[in-house]
Image (cartoon, rainbow, N blue to C red):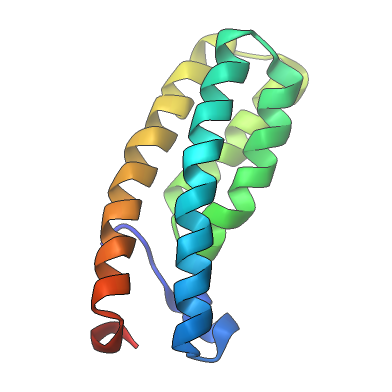
Length: 117
């Protein structure tokens, strides 16, 4: 499983309703983040791209997607300094791939939440 829900479990005190709500919010947010990251990249709005990477990093971290959180931190820093712009597309692509996989996993968790918590 890509997502590590340890932090979410601890933060929620194991409250299944809160966990369900957080997963549902996450699933909605990543769709928006994915679309907006692509739009900012396409328009070369690098400052906005970096700010959105920072914002997305919080949600990603809560779901325990640590490798992706590191990549978003890298994108945030690179975009802030407008460095290595050729790397941005790869990070955005990685974001989309990882979050699509995570959303599938988390939807499975929602269906079988009693087995996980």
